Length: 142
Image (tube, rainbow, N blue to C red; front, side):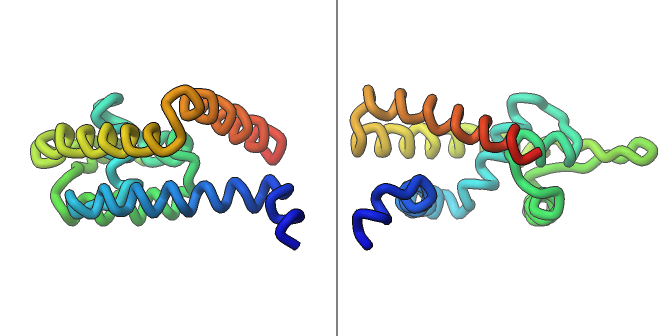
């Protein structure tokens, strides 16, 4: 059975995800924020204002998950929502903007920790490979 597991792409990708998620959760616990919220805030910091559908597309998450994340971030005062007709636009509040350096620092610490665990050279190759695989699979299941 062990051979089958280690030959399974699904098993290995899932195992990698669980292990990386544990390390990310540990790092982000220090700033009292889930890593997924940190990603959303960094996305808003880069683009300044996005629609919920663009956030869902960019983070590759379901619209209902995006709505749940946005509701929690708004409750914490980290984002603002602006409605124009049937469209909603999301941006960072001043409190959210003030959190960006701390979140960025946490992501940098996380990357350093992960790079150390797999070596920088392997990490860069694997990030490209993982991203390419995710893109190919997403295209095929559309």
